[in-house]
Length: 210
Image (cartoon, rainbow, N blue to C red; front, side, top):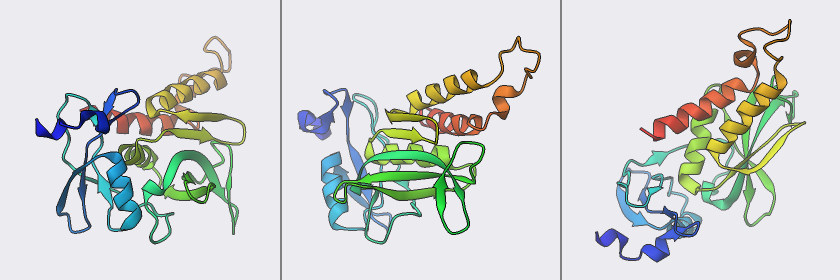
């Protein structure tokens, strides 16, 4: 397959992943297949670059379906490729300001990105109710970056989404009553404020596994 003739230049993470990206402009026209670095360079020069396909393990079929996502926190001219890492936090509206809070106190979930040039965290997206899992998965699809989670009492840094699912599950188990406790209920885990987040991320990941 001629697509793989420059394999060494298309791999990262010690060759474990092959990054091939099919890019589309705003008209939906197919613009070709590029490495991640090529696509980032093009995105830095032209705001019209809005989508790219997710990467698959080397040797598997490359998915040619483009993923287009509008990130409602990005200023005009800034693309998702301007960020080198992402952070998820529960937030609440304080009537004039948005503040990070603990899960269960939140109004919605916000995703922040660490801007490469400004070297600071900036808002990327405020996720409508029920959409945070797909939003995070699409960000990882597009950038290949890790995601950290942070609220007022816990932080998980530089985490793969499947690992974040496991970390959230462990925290839920740690925070609900032991099943032998007299106050324990069968739905304690389901009622935990992080359970919906865990379920939504897991649903998005499973959808990508086919």
